[in-house]
Amino acid sequence: MPDDAGAQTRTQILLDVEQIQAVIPHRAPFLLIDRIVELDPGKRCVGEKDVRLSRDDFLRGHFPDYAVMPGVLIVEALAQTGAVLVMYDQGDLVPRAQRQGARAGAGRHDAGVRGGPHLCARQGRL
Image 1 (cartoon, rainbow, N blue to C red):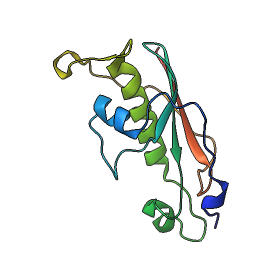
Image 2 (image 1 turned 180 degrees about the vertical axis):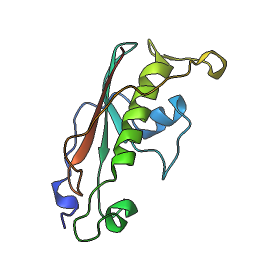
Image 3 (image 1 turned 45 degrees about the vertical axis):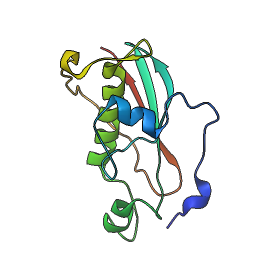
Image 4 (image 1 turned 30 degrees about the vertical axis):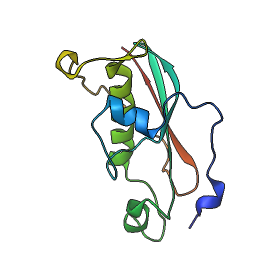
């Protein structure tokens, strides 16, 4: 099984975990993005999650002999990145009463996410 040694970090973090939590209501263990590394309000957002065997229990329980992040959690990470895109407006947080609902369109993930790398979730506005 891969370990934490391969985890990569980015030097430019636009939003950290605390700032993400100010925008969307998710909290650990259900917050599935660690940072936002690109944000073009209303157009594009890129979020990342470090996938680690030491902290992510789902890796040990989902195919234990070949630890992999469940696809439904990858889709949820994409949805949370999209929620940051929708709910973040020109550097100002949109009041909860004014937030729009969002829907998931057709999406896909091509490869399994194993412990070690980070998941990069890219979202754009249709």
